Length: 195
Image (cartoon, rainbow, N blue to C red; front, side, top):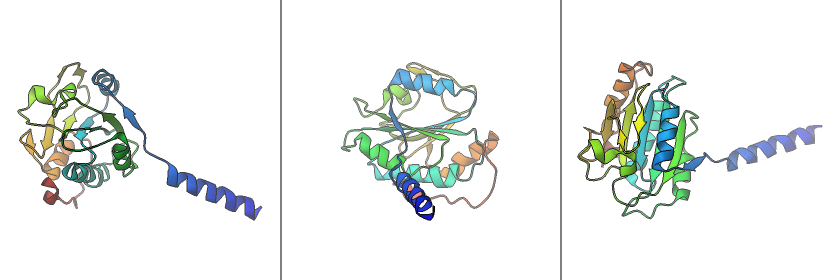
């Protein structure tokens, strides 16, 4: 009996080591459907390249400084990992980055836009971005996304000239203003990641 229990324990331990976070291929129309199906929840939409060091820092800040400290089970993250010029990113790289997340409130997608601005996600329609693949946007409950014409976000941050300058504390404070997470202190603003 002891041997059987040991075998079962080892089996599930090995299984946990090989488990991967799901990263779904997504198109503009598919994302519109996904986003709107979650309209009862506040959503954080993030567009990142999985080989961009600043993007990885951005992802880590969201994971550790925001989701880990916001205890609302309905808060939803939608991370779109994209392939952009200058980085030979592949879906496998997106999977590697997604595996750093264990929060089941966060959904991961893979998209391969044809240009430097993922216009299919509407970023260029309401910002003056030169590129928009390092950006996080808050959409409150009730916000709907129309194909080709997404609603402007409630609040957004980026490490480019888009939106507001990168500041994770300010971003999290906007969620607190919406009542989407507690106001516990102790968050660190890693401006070093803003490079």
